[in-house]
Image (cartoon, rainbow, N blue to C red; front, side, top):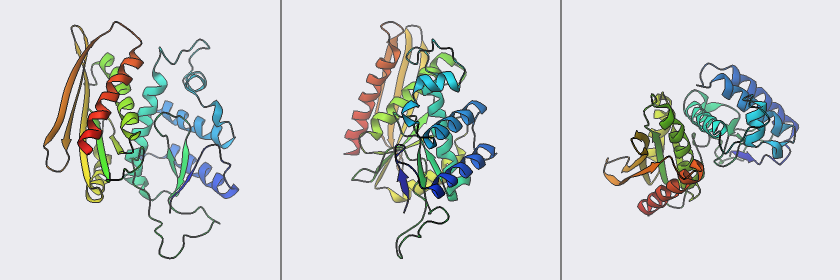
Length: 277
């Protein structure tokens, strides 16, 4: 049975040792698609959590201490931390859905937080074995949020053209906001990573087999003359039937961008929840 430790709760010595060992192996692994900055990101938030400084893990501290931003760094106007957190979540999801499926420790960054939680699919060395008849199999990978009562899951794919850097920045924020809003409705969310989605294939196949309903949510942001076009399409993952789709054009006026994107994401989450029944 997977143990899910809250960051504010002290770990047992053997658990802390297992986390440190797993972090070192993960950072050195060639099987996870992490940039150097996201290796520093993960190392920083894990180290701060183990040291009991989870309350310090905020966007400002990460921007300054990890990404080298100056003391005047403003997370509201510079979204680098939110963008890199989204990429880190996607990389972890793909890794644990493939090569890392049997890892002794999993690192999870939940939507809306940069403080990691640690999951132990099997007990660390020296701890009790699960009771007879209780499964010690790993929890489903790529998890963001929890399983809803109906066993509904959504696979989110970011389809913004990577060559359009302005749209990609907004697209990363849009996807992150959608994931957070959908997961907040107790719907299980999987995020397929960019640029290589192959690592998620095994996870998604298992997801389809286990869930009552699975939806594919394609999200994109496109540059237009007036500003940006935010588009999404929700379809049944098994049949391919389109359940809902919409586009919304927004100019670059009336900032802040973050608040506007959050509002658009909430609309998407409402439509997803309605389709999920």
